[in-house]
Image (cartoon, each protein chain N blue to C red):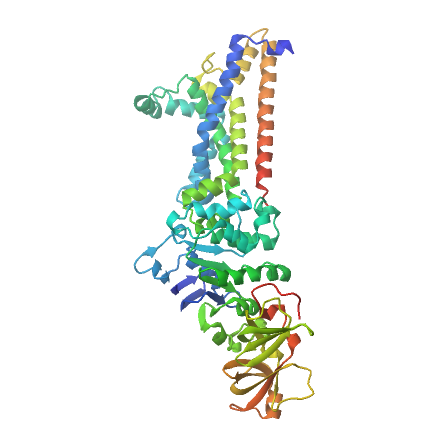
Length: 370
Length: 234
């Protein structure tokens, strides 16, 4: 399953020129507002016709301006979840969910009503009208409605952007289940590092209508310098880990990663479960020798493999910890005082309490914040 | 109360005819009304202002002028009248069908206006969402747009019906005032006022016409409210 986009488009003074190809489970289109990501996803859905170029999903050409091909939106079989849910106000939740089913050829209907309702936890809502739902419930129904049309690709246009933090936390686990338990590839538009780091397998980073970086989440997240200024503080290394054990006495979970054991506040997942964590660069301290008499529990030995200016008085270090790269943001003054240079052996120090709900992705909701 | 319902056969005929004419005028106006409202609300084309002006013409012109124009075009010797009579056997002149045509034309601008406003109020993003779920434009219109504009449709239909119940000038000019054929309630009332001793009949028919109009208004309110409650638009 792959998505191929190679398009050029003009909107007044704004020019979009985007080329990427992704075969990921969940590809995030990431960038600040005004970078063209919503325009791009609308083109994939068939809501906007690009001036030139091609769009193909799984080898099926949807748009080819040169050949005059433009498959209308109702024949693309691409599900779309909008930021503003867009449920049909004159239908019950159940009718909203069943809507797309009518239009799907019987042979291609793979989505099962009961399974989707169960996956999204919307069984108690079926008889209600959209006006009687909360924002989070509405968004879950919108996801279900798109899924039940048995799409070949699911597009999500900032589905969490209009929700408060509590509602976001309510929906994120469902999107993770969607990514892990269904076979539908997802293209997900977001401007939030936290969301992208938690959900994406692949990232296409956009700025001013152009692709500035694309690739796996681990690789793209190394480039803190490409993050929008207001999100830069949220940037950091993304590591895929496994739950080794729970430390019930202290209310912690021990995760195993290539870089070594990492202790985080207790997660509500079983031992052996995969957990993705984001270690924000600003949360990482650097020591040149193994620290003692220090409260921080996570001390990861490694080698400096990158030094980049971090904006203002800071520099960003990439530290290779046994194959996993951890990022650290420190001041230039500290770098000079510690005489840090490429190839130097250091210890990356991370406090357990710096892992909170926003940067510990797990298959299920977490118990409490760190 | 008895004297109110103690109508002569001619008066009963006028009541029945009026309801028939108004109902037919309303029903036949609906499809073109929806179509033109859609065009005016959504389409971009050359001559849109002209079409809008044409639709509103009966509202601005004196009814007698509209009636006379209908007579010229749909009368026995009018080009449209000759064409329809020859090819479809539809005759308007001095028939109740002509009264229905006149009433339909006079009520048309009111109907189009109400429907157009409700179409313009529909969130097109919701229609786009239906499209991404696989519905082609025709399905989107019938399953999303039409139900969402239902209150506007009802309002437009009732306005057209009420206008038809009261239409006088264009009808009498186009199809005259023939008892049992083209004599609707207003024409009958007018006839009563022209003869000595007709006051009682005029008053009876006036009260009946008030009752019918009020009933139509109440019915539309009830319908619109029921539809509104069912939809619960945020």
